[in-house]
Image (cartoon, rainbow, N blue to C red):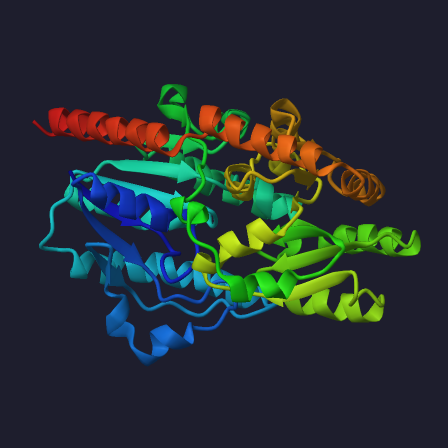
Length: 413
């Protein structure tokens, strides 16, 4: 099939869409990417891209079409909004011009946020009749309200109308958790086009180890690893409160943070102010290929989200990745994410914001035997193999692509 991938984020940025694209190419599809210039999560254009942008015009056998966007910056809501809007406009008009001679059977929209990323695909559907499959990984307007970006009920209502406009013009809307159905159906008139499509773990996490990276986590302490975006949604203030409780009890536990994001500088400042530099180690962003080393060095893996209805319906993508890494999991999140960890019997869970329970769970897990920790890790991997198998999920996605492409052809005849 000829597949157009519409995504604001793409390689060398670290997102699951990179893995999906590679697999679709391996399965014989002709894939074209429409994306922006890499600047996530630092907010500044990647130096390697800025130095040689031509190196990033092809990925694993597919063409990458990049459009100019405003950099998202750090800590500025206005810059973030401008970043979102600039992609929509550039992808819709400049992207359409660059793709004017190409034909596609289907477009696939990847949406970790914002929901507006789907608008260029809807524009292409109007102009060229390309059916749209939209993968919803972040519920709007609920997420905007949850992280405090938008507090006005009137503005949230306007965003809700925009979401309805988008969902109702897609041919298929995929929700990343079963609980997303409730959030999607209130804005989608045709409930039959809503499907459950969870994330999987990228194959890179089964790759080789880097001994120089392992050295960064050498310690006799129990090592808890948080890997990924350092943002408002991850509730680092509660993580640091748990770290304070651990330190106060004199426990030999260290929390390593591998990643970057809009809240990173603020977290770094809080770590200094609270005297937690020996308990919370901020390692910053590393290449995706280095992540297997960090996972293998950790004793347990941590996933958190703030308290909100939207987040309680979300399965953070790192949950699937953590499971395949065969490590025990610690959570501080309510709803679906913790439910899955409990169901898999692969870790200890706490509700969002409950830093006391998180601290207690870290202490409890640090006292477990090596054999018990191994059992938790094996349970995680077994559950992932049953519920989040990569090949099965991507095969399902392929069949949906074929269905919507065929229906689109029938409507046009």
